[in-house]
Length: 362
Ligand code: NAD
Image (cartoon, rainbow, N blue to C red; front, side, top):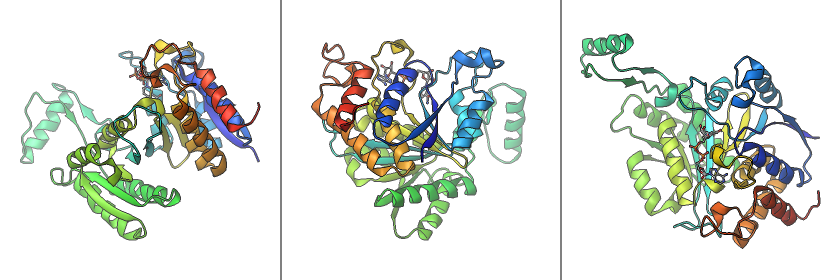
């Protein structure tokens, strides 16, 4: 049976990467029915100024699975980020970013193989903010003073909510992910020694969930200590589960350990759907130039294949990408020793090389 998947090409370099990725996935022999949907600034005029029209959300909810290219968020225009709206509307609470070393990628480390699981709906990113000098900020500061604490009158305030339910579902998700993917250990990351009622709650609930999942090893780490240890001994870690802000920062640190954004895929899991997309953005300066590296989006496609339980196809695509990277010939400029290397190939050539490796003619 064909897998119905919503394909959102995105903008900037997104459409080229989406096309290259679709060709690779189609050449695995797995049957896809692509439901192509457009979102972003380029289509908002056709939909009453809405960059994420309802029919796009309906398509994702109907198919339950989407593969998405990056979408630009214009700065300072009051434009709602499509990515944030998507995450909120579909309750995409679990972001997964695997960070894995591939032979041939320039990096200071070898054999890194980490999974970062980031809670994506709570914490300081919940969007509950009070601007310095506003009436609401003054009111809140007065309320805090009445309750025995002190905040300077000229402070801006961001609220950090971390709930039992939100923590439970992401830590359970991390254990499920670990079990399904044959991983050995889950590390819960926090700063519970300082923020007792938010991170403290997170740690307490994580420990409860760990007791219910005793077949997978569990430990916890304070976030600053974790960062130092990741740089010194990344091999000591396996699956990391983190609240929103630490997850955002630590996933970039881990991407840095394995050579940067070029090979950093991502997945967003929610109660209604799963959306697979590269970690990088739309790099508008390279749009339409057949120059950008499609491998992070292709590896996001590998995560999607695994989610669809097409394990054999996932393994084959991942191996084909790893072979092309290791050979170092059919790779884009960013994976060459120098950025102006004349032997760098284009986005579509990378797809051709990977399809060749897959040994299937399309
Ligand atoms: P970016 O990741 O788009 O680009 C930063 C730099 O990284 C680029 O200039 C380029 O040198 C390099 N780069 C990124 N992807 C590459 C690729 N596939 N191949 C080769 N080089 C690549 O980050 P940015 O410039 O901060 O953001 C640009 C836009 O993308 C912004 O509007 C931002 O909001 C958006 N964005 C979207 C998503 C998403 O859709 N999930 C994620 C991040 C950023």
